[in-house]
Each structure stands twice: as C-alpha cells, then as structure tokens.
Figure 1 (cartoon, rainbow, N blue to C red):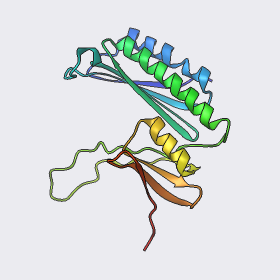
Figure 2: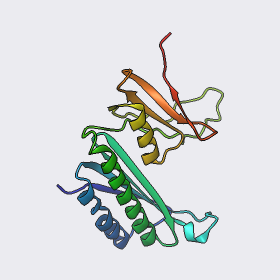
Figure 3: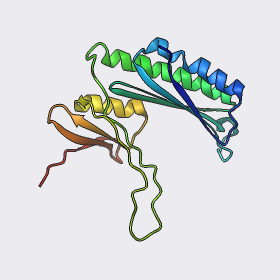
Amino acid sequence: MALKIDVFTKDIDLTEKIHDYTIKKVSRLERFLNEIGDCRVDLAYAKTARNVADRFIAQITIRGKGFILRSEERADGIFAAIDATVDKMTRQIERFKGKHWSHRAEAGAAAAVGSGEEPSEEAVPLIVRRKTFTLTPMDEVEALEQLQLLGHEDFFVFYNANTNKINVLYKRRDGTYGLIDPVVG
C-alpha cells in the first residue's frame, strides 16, 4: 500500500523538485512502520529566525491506529531540513516500536491538543477552532511516553484504561508532571 503524504508550505514556493524530494524521502518511513495511516509534511521559511542556519523548517506528523508521532528540524537549506527531519522521525519510530510493539501491540495514543489559538479581542470569547480525535485506552506511563514522543510538552488528553475516565497529563513549571482526574460533581 502506498503511503499518502500531504505536503504543505508556508512562506516558501513548493516547486516540483522540492515536492518530489520530500515524497521520495518521507515515503521511506513506511519501511520502518507499516501501520502509518496518513502523513503530513509542513515546510516553512522563517525569515525572522535568530540564526541564519535555522531559517528552513521541516515538520513531519504521522498518524496511525493508536499513535501520533511528530518531528521537526531546522537547517540552512530546505533539503537539509527535510533530511534531518526524516532522520529524527526514523529514530522516533524505532524508539516507539521498541517500547510498544514488544509490550502491547495495541498500545496507542489519545491525542495531543495544542494551545495555538489566538485570544479574541471581543469581550465575549469565541470558540474559533474545534478538534475531534479518537481516544485509545492507555495507562499513565503510556500517556507520558506519547506526550514526549509528540514533542508537545504542555499537555496531553487521554482515556485512562485504569480508571475508565478521560485524564489530562500536563508538565509543571518545575519539570515534573501533573495529572488532572476530573470528577463530575
């Protein structure tokens, strides 16, 4: 089965050469992990980056049944950024397979929800974005691993298999983690 790869750009022209190179490199990830459902590649140019060598950004997000993996790298050229991101994703896949495939074939991720929305200037806040995702049962240790694998260090929403409730795992200012276990009152 051919891997479906969506390529998106920001502040950079997606030439056929860049598109073909991206597809060629990213499609190799399927060799390492057959269960990839969809793959998204974001390419960007940040002209305001502090370091000139960090202006080109490549980010890969792969999703499958029960997992989401994300990697991002910066470089002085778009092709170098793509290569570095694919290498980083390969290492993440190997780490993921080592931790999960040997212990639980159905271990999975809930979903990571970022807090990237801008607050509204109006007096009454508006919901400007809604996200829907599938929750896969997991324990707190698996949720912590998923939070770290995704690269989202703020918070992670998951269905706790031990308590049969939705929990939120979050990183505290002192570097430790907290768990929100809601109770209907």
